[in-house]
Length: 101
Image (cartoon, helix red, strand yellow):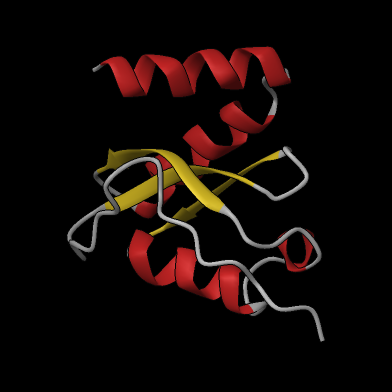
């Protein structure tokens, strides 16, 4: 079994349960994964434990790159859908914009 390196997130992880979040993580192979959750901290821990999305299981560890808060699950799901349609370059621009905010 491969031993995972512990890594610190690039951005502060929100653990507030109020509201829903769209988050972008960078996988160990450099790809960007986008998802939704109401607890970002717990979700990142799930991804890194191998119990998150199938896509991230073979691409651990992951690092949180950005997160955006929405008022409802529906709103965050719509935003996730729009984010997933973006190109890699557009996603990186969104991440850089988030870091600059």
